[in-house]
Image (cartoon, rainbow, N blue to C red; front, side, top):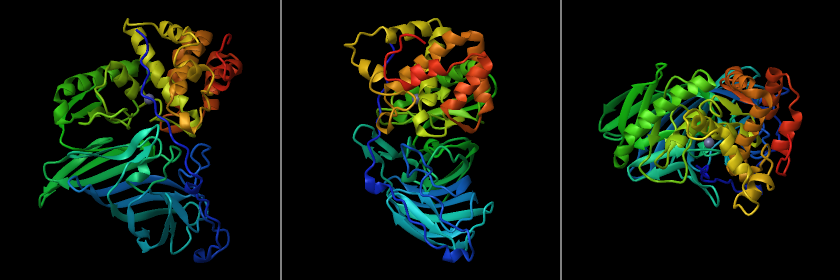
Amino acid sequence: MPPRIRSTRTVATLTATACLLVPAVPAAASGGHGYRPGSPGLGDAYFPEEGNGGYDVGHYDLALDYDPASNALVATAKVKARATQDLSRFNLDLKQLTVKSVQVDGRKAGFSRKGQELTVTPARGLRKGTRFTVTVAYSGTPKPISRPDLGTFGWIKTPDGAYVVSEPDGASTWFPSNDHPLDKATYTYRVTVPKGTQVLSNGVPGGESTRGGKSTFIWNERSPMASYLAMLAIGKFQVAKGRTASGIPVITGVAPNRADELKPIHQGTIDAIDWEEKVFGKYPFASTGGIRVGVDVAFSLETQSRPIYGYQPDTPTIVHELSHQWFGDSVSVARWKDIWLNEGFATYAEWLYNEQHGIETAQQTFDYLYNQPSTWKYYNDLWLNRKTGDPGRDELFEITAYYRGAMTLHALRGRIGDKAFFALIKAWTKAHRDGNVTTRQFIALAEKISHKDLDGLFHTWLYTQTKPVKW
Ligand SMILES: [Zn+2]
């Protein structure tokens, strides 16, 4: 059974004007020396303007009032953060939408917009270590981001509601955020919709109430989460509830026109998590499940605790998206160039699942790819065009991170043996749970556990643009 070529996603090059480096200004408002603006980006080589420096978000409390008929959103975001430097001002990422007011700790703050940067100047400077709450009142009709090769992501309207898939930088289409995986935070959503419409999200439900023709749904994600994994699904859903073998609550929702998919997705989720806990270690979050939206789109996304499926998911797809709960969601990249740590692992999870369910060994899948002739459609993409460990912003979701990433893990497994390899996988998810990682850290842990020098292997597989012949 040949591996499926997953839908490919690319991120178009951002225009130069989208990158705004705001020059420092004297921190007059701070009334003191040493206060300076937080940086307008987090230094990611692929997305220099994503995220912002000078503070660390602990929690987002998002109150959203949404009307599916008009796609109108009226919202208040409370962003609880801690200053990591003496701050005269700082930025949040927010694309489109209209900001009505900004407060810091209940006091009116100055603000300005330029591109995706919302610059907030508090009435007084914020000393390093200070905890503060930014309250942003905003509204508008949220629009997704459309890029030529990536398709459409961010806030996406459906006939009876909307849903959100934000990788890599779509979170800022619907709430002001520190939009980079490095700044993970917990979330509370309070979403008000017309009575009869439902809201599903990450984490666990915190109750719902109805008043005056409107219903408010509360959801809480209590584990740290990267902003691109924040998710809403608004509309009408059929919902199934259950538990995994280890007792994790499962909530699965499908649009009414996909009712026949409810049972397979729900049971498929339980089966996948049961198997994955054995291979990857304890499931990292308080709940799981899945959401099948009513429209067919080209991709699914591993939104934290509850993936969104844009097409009818087969077993490998469910295994893939749920394996990301460990690889990507709990153990998150510190920089986008290490995307293979997400996609290589999730692809290899599919191979391992097949192997342990008598379908095809990982070696057979590896050989299938390795033995493709140079006339194969994906030959150059897999071997020559990109470095797996640094594929380039436009190729984040192309096959090198997925297939050559998985092949890297298989090559590693061959070198260090099954015992060390499977110990490494569990050690990796445990050591970095709720954290951020780089490839360098993975290599270090692999060397520690295997007592082998693995620099050559990883260099060949991740950082050369050749087909490896020896490793
Ligand atoms: Zn994936």
